[in-house]
Image (cartoon, rainbow, N blue to C red; front, top):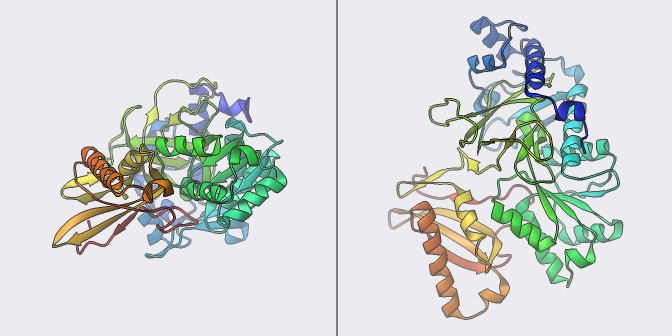
Length: 434
């Protein structure tokens, strides 16, 4: 039932003692970096000073901008000869955020991934197809190392090329696949185009979905389309990548591995800590990374700690699915709106496909939210009167949810841009975007 019972079922006191010990070790490494070395000196804190894990809150937050400002080696704690891997963001709007790993870090990451996969019911007897980009993006290699650590047969399929993905599933008897949620709707369309169904024409039984925020409605739709269980995965490259938190078979929140990360939920405006059960920004500290530890890193992801215990018996706390990001929010007509709010509405409507795009535009000197929604083929080519009613229905439902009236445009399936990586949901083309 457990990959590492000794760690996954620690008592609260045992887990806290382990966190204190690992954070003191983390500070020994962090002190070797120019960024944290200077910070520790200013704070008057030496490695080994921590006796209460809550002392982490005495440290200032680390931000993505800090990583960019100290690019590339300002957070590095080890000589470059000891490094074996880096992962990086695209850096299209400035310096990228880059994370370095030594062999210990990669081995630890692989083990966390194996633990995550195991808790979702995946075993060494599975055939695991990884439909994710390999390279600087962490999703491909992060899962690859975890699959191999677990001992399952891996198919490093990479992203895109849906027909080839289906053929790989059929040829090798894929039982588990990993993909981003927005791609799976497109993959299912290709199944249908060729007269196939995942349920009858593959051995697929499990999907792992992650890398982009998604709603419970989207997860349920994916499960219905493929006839499988879809387990939510959470990670971010600054914390290694995937394997930070994962759903177990009960699908009641994601177990966040507290032997590797110290977790806080803070109010994104006041930055004050929030109690379990309240939504706020996720802040994380690495506890078992050597080459580039991060202390109180602001993830910008919005979630909460789920109170109570899980039926699986794991004692690590659970976070709820990510409901959005503080930097994804946009303001239109005075209303604060998260794309996930709109997705939650759209995926409740059976006529709607799985792809949508929010364009923020200035029309006649007024900022407007234009929501383009793909509609299933049988509906799009149907009665114009019904399409008009559907447009009004979607408009009303979005307005009731976000308190701002959108301009809704219904479009054909497959007409909106498809991305191999994370889906782009919002384009801000306003004269003065906010």
